[in-house]
Every structure is written in C-alpha cells, then in structure tokens.
Image 1 (cartoon, rainbow, N blue to C red):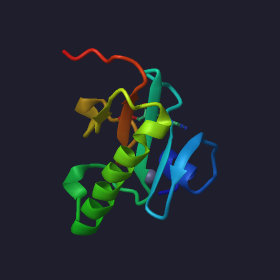
Image 2: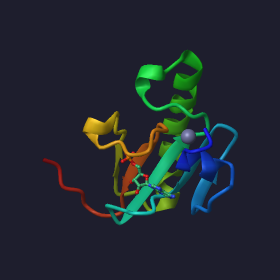
Image 3: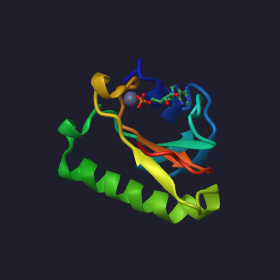
Image 4: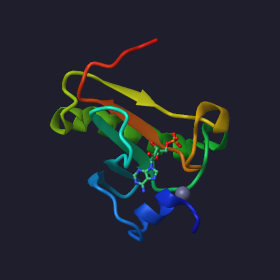
Length: 111
Ligand code: AMP
Ligand code: ZN
C-alpha cells in the first residue's frame, strides 16, 4: 500500500534501522522509543489487524514470534521483554500495518 509508512520501509523507500530481515518479516528500531530498547517486528504483507488473519498470515506471525524469541538475547533483551500489538485506533494503533512492539532493555512497570 503506497501510503503506508511500514510498506515504504519494507520497499526501501524510506530509511529504517533494521536489526533483522527475511522473506516474510522485518524487525527495525521504533523511531520514537518508549523503552530503552523498542523494536517493531512487521510482517511484510500489508494488513491492519488480526481480524484480517488467514492461515498463511497466522503462520508468518508464528514464525515472527519464534524469530523474536531466538533473536532476543542478541538484541539486549536477555533480561526479559514485552510484546504489544495495538489493534485499532482505540488501542492507540497509528500505523495501519500489523506490527509487534518489542519493549525491553530495562525493568518495565506493569499496571
Ligand atoms: P502503533 O501506535 O501501535 O500503530 O505503533 C506505530 C509505531 O510506529 C509507533 O511507535 C511509531 O513511533 C512507529 N513509527 C512510525 N513511523 C516510523 C518510522 N518511520 N520508523 C520507525 N518507527 C516508526
Ligand atoms: Zn503497509
């Protein structure tokens, strides 16, 4: 989708600080971090929310989760981390391309 900022990053049309990429997903640094380490894991296919999940998309997301788990120690997240997936505007979703926030690098408050 040509107006989507994450599609532009995936297409290489705007820069990002990528820490991982394969055929299906990309992981890059959030431009406005809310934790010491704040990454975004993004499936390359454009869709907005889990309401649009198909078996194929679910497979990609499962591989994204296992990739995050595998990479975490090498990304400075060995002490633990939080995953957040905002779904829709009421949840604070500002980019309409499904993404997993990866937060860590410091103790995180809860509640
Ligand atoms: P959300 O509010 O869940 O849709 O998250 C969107 C995230 O994308 C926010 O944390 C933004 O800081 C981040 N973001 C927006 N534009 C960029 C960009 N060009 N590069 C990296 N992160 C971005
Ligand atoms: Zn997109």
